[in-house]
Image (cartoon, helix red, strand yellow):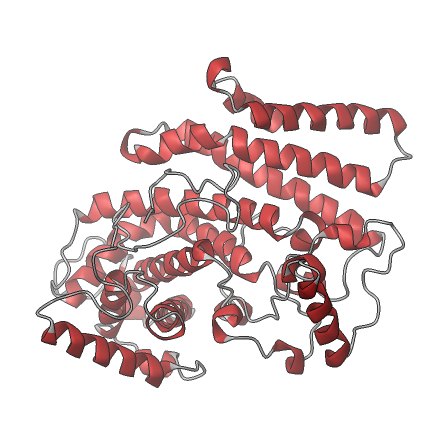
Length: 452
């Protein structure tokens, strides 16, 4: 709980969120009660204490984060470091709680498949592996509310229903007025223990903060390269600008990927994963879609840093060190593939799966163009992806419609709803919040400012 102290001390009493303070107070009381009972304490009490503190922390730290994100160019690096440490410390606490639930047999079998050992992704990994390319390929069948096994009988990993029984359960639940996510618990450990809303809010806050910091630094270093300039030169400039932020970019991608994977059920057989494509991508809300857009841009920057960033002293048209050595360790190739997949999935979602949703595709199309200006083959990188031809046909149709309307916004949303913030160029939804939450723990209010 001391993690919040440096930030709480900076918040005037008259500006402190009252609800957040009440939650933090309840969490403190619970901690004192649990400490007095140790080593005999209930796992559900630990969960309640952690949930109250996490909820209060996310709300209480929001004004501080908003202040920093709104003026990143002049933000104190120590303040950013404190906020990052707070959010990462919270994730570490969640990971420990998930570990206790696993030891008690309270997690659904196979639930840890998406996140490794800690259950929360507390220390963002820089690895780029096959799983991360597959973002959100699980069954995504609910919010994983731990109350489904709150009686402590340890049957959270019991036998799987057959599909007919599961369908009947859902039909009965919907008829009773319950939401789908209230009925079918699943997901990674953090989702199972805290519920999707709370866990995804934490993943989003950790990833989005890093994105905004990296984006601001890169855009300032590039001096705002205009769309339509020479692609190879833009890539080179992006690589040089992104190279100093490589580890930050990787950490941001890891956190945002945890958001997209939060409802992944690694134990589900392939036959049970026949979801709509948008859910297989991990897109359950506007914030998930924004996270996918952010990942595409971050992956592009990381590829450019790996392939072109090492030759910071090279002039225009000169080969960088990475180009000269042919990407011996494969880092550039992997990040290129990841960027191509993320851009494709975002465009496929906006132009085809959610046609007419009025999200901007301008920046994503520019990223696809820039990737096409490299020595790598975009089409080959998307060989395992579905919907490529469908997405290309939608893009062609959109272009024809724009020509006919003399530049009018049509189809997937390059029209009047566009809102470019932090130079990201994405429109339409979600802010730096946390998924489906409308409370400040999710920050759907302005704060870095993606808004409709």
